Image 1 (cartoon, rainbow, N blue to C red):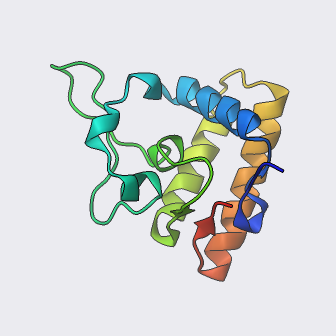
Image 2: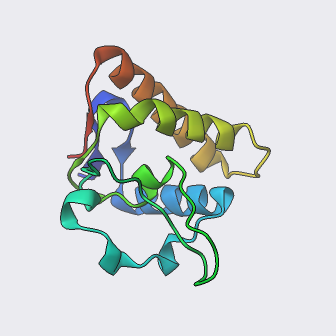
Length: 132
């Protein structure tokens, strides 16, 4: 038992998924541990952002930053979905991180590729990625 998603973006342990996302956060410069979790709704945690984009503001005087990787970093880890309309930008963000030269662990590198391939399948099918 563990976390599974449609299109085989992720099939593995919750702990592995947590470590994967922490490494993505480090590579992208987003420290979600410092995120203002009171500013996010339960619907957003489940992937339903509507017309809003997830942003992180590092300090009170810093401008808010948005990156599509936040759709994944700020997502609930056991249910919900990544909406189809965000998949292409998320895929592009993951590809940029993968190709950035960041020293990912072998585990993270393997799973970035798996996630990108799954996103490709979902995009081609015109469907969102469900978390189970």
